[in-house]
Length: 425
Image 1: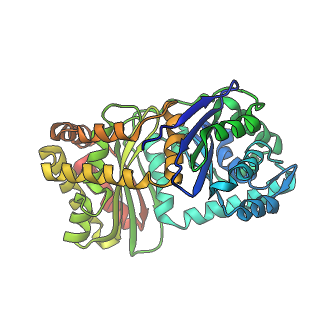
Image 2: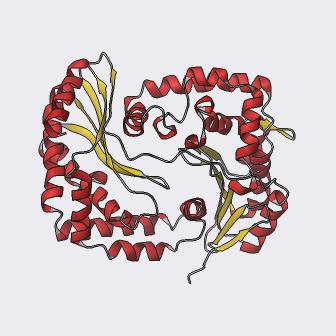
Image 3: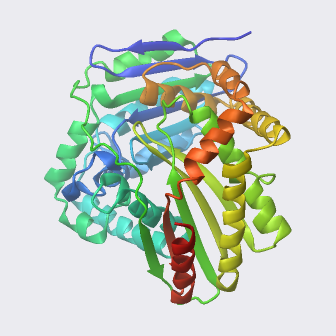
């Protein structure tokens, strides 16, 4: 039996989704503010991520250790994340622990102490996190391809973690002010999925959040059309080179997003994709190659990532050229399209059997579209995409030769990439 979600909006703007899954033993809870790194000014670079860390440090009624003990004592754990356009916190526990878990999470979300001593300690922790990211090229390249695509002066082109310099400039007053502006009713989304009655969710959520100040939505700088920039970070390892290419994408609400997503699957999202088959299976050039579709409310990117030995970079670029040119010139086959549709719809259906995935789906629907979107409707739209629509998207993406690039590797690898860019650009 299909059970529809129950949606509610409190007078202060808090949006709530309850997704009943009575056959499950668990419940998953998500709390979001739709404020992320793209909502920061230059002086606030890294602030949203910093505040995510500070929420874990305690409230007037619970220390950091008490929060951890209470949540873990309920058979749960909590995770937080910051991305460009939102910040989220999620936990999963046995369904019978819903009320207790929600109360802890509400206190955690609403009442961080932002103690000066904790702030200084966490500043040091994030300095270490920044250093760790820079030491992991597969992660660090995400920052530099964003800078290449959006520009260093645009919020989407800046790292989510901030810099050592921006972190050191934050005062407690700065952090507290940003928190109070971001974590308000107008920006807050609550999503719950699992073996819990929707009425109980609404009662508890209203009890904990009805008196939260309404506030207002954050403004943000509109994204430009993706640039054709290049960023390079030299490392002294002559063996390994990490490469990322970013082509124009689409906004989240663009009607072309289904055809573009299928194109991404066929390009490089799984093991049967053209990039995987060409670069790894046929040529044995790499261990990891993949593509990914990144979408925001106003723009997007289609990205390719590959890690290869430096001596294989030129051949890898040749293989990438062959794949994208083939897609632009000839489109995809009927078998490829049907396989990609089955993959997308099948992965979605399997994922949504899980309370955490249902919770995420409902929360992201409210965050991005301010309403529930039935997964079955999305599946129908995927199934309706034609060969001609995917080919048209391939031509739009790849025929114009508009792309940005980022490379982490020795200087000779950057020379190879620069030569390739001149040839195909």
